[in-house]
Structures are given as structure tokens and as C-alpha cells.
Amino acid sequence: MTGNIGDVYLPCHDPDHGKTISIKFYPPKLFKQPLSPAYLEREKYLHVPDDLRVHKCLLFTLPNFRSRWLFRDSNGTVSEVPIEGDIVISNALGLRDCALAGMGPALLANWLIDEDIAQGKLIDLFANYHVTATDFETAAWLLYPSKTYLPNKVRVMINFLKRKCSDCK
Image 1 (tube, rainbow, N blue to C red):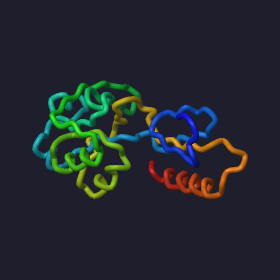
Image 2: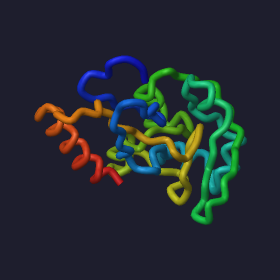
Image 3: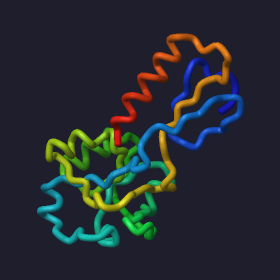
Image 4: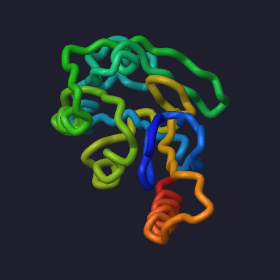
């Protein structure tokens, strides 16, 4: 982060702390492995993450998101699963739509698909694993200028975000 950030800044990567105050406030299990019930009915062999090797996954255009996914089990053991797919999209909503249409497994942020999972439109395929494409410390951060005087509107927004995001576990 460089220059003036204004009132607040919400990056989804480990921030450059510099002269700002930073708060990591989004849950550690940021990504899930969504899959439509129709796809799972059609392609029954998806019991462990390694089974993804033989499926055409829905891929995001970022380099680290389209060649392998990392899975961490409850014991802390990490496995790297190489993935392939014919559909590569630069828009997370587009990937979500493809997953909803039963086109394959995807890797999406929990905040984008939690409602679909709650409604039964998608299944969290490997719910007992933490999954990521980069590292397991990925999170959303709240950054704001380190000031003695913080405008009330910024303080209200910070408190609102902290309250809302504490419910996102």
C-alpha cells in the first residue's frame, strides 16, 4: 500500500503495515469448494481432495488459482492437488454461476457462496478441510490511518465492520 489511503482500505492480502493500523477480521476458512448437487449425483467419485485430479474444475484466471489447490485436514496435514479445467473465468460471480449450473468443482470465497450452501443449491464438497490456492493465512484486512483523531464516520464504519465480520465465522 502506498500513498494516501483515505479513510479505510480493505485489501484481501497481508498488508504493508507502514503508517496504518491494520486489523485482520475475516475468518481463517476464507475459501470453500462448492459443487452443485447435480454434478455430485452425476460424478460420484469425489470423496477426498485428491479425486479432483480427474475432474474438470472451474478455474479463476489468477495464476496461483488455476494449477493447484491446497487442502489442510483437521490434523494440519497439507496436501497439494494439481487441478485442470477447460473453463477459466476472471469473475468470481461467473464461476459461482458455473458451479450452480453443475459444470464442475470450483474454489470460491465463503462470503460468495454461503447462502447458496445454506439453501442447498451448492454443497461444500470438502467441508472438513481448509482449502486455498495460495496460503492458509489469506484474510480480509481493515486498514485505516494511524491518527490521534479519527473522524467519527470512520470509527462508526470500523465498529460496524468488526461487528458484522465477527458473525462471519
